Amino acid sequence: MFAHGYLARAVKSPRLILTYAGAANQRYDFKPDTFVDTTEVIDHAAWLINELGPEGVILGKKGPEYVEHVILDGPAERGYPKRLDLTAEAASLLATDARRGEMCGVRYAEAFQTIRFQPRELW
Image (cartoon, rainbow, N blue to C red; front, top):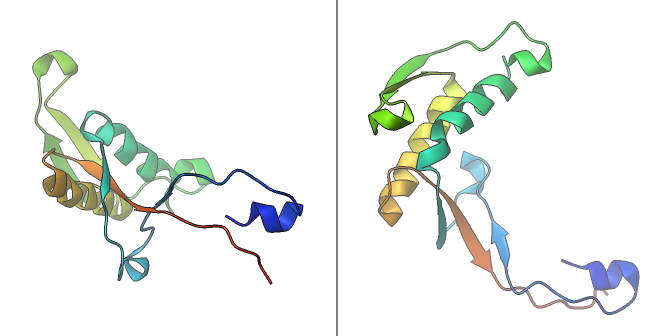
């Protein structure tokens, strides 16, 4: 956002910046106004969180410790119903995406807040 200050020359600024609430302690003033429907890929997102989380095998740990199991409904031609085994992190992702989906009228969604930033001099 301050490239013009770092580079000491004029830089084209973005029209908008998308911000994302990354953790519960960062959501106190997060007011989403842009949503991305993740319904078609929620099972893949949960799998990634399972694998990359604290117990994930990608990090060389013992493997995911599942705390919850859910069944996703959908069209049979797309492989539904699907059983998802979830770690605590993946269960949180699923719950958050479901809540954000309700906000915009889809089953699951990711949410962003747009900000318009006017570049200014650093000092």
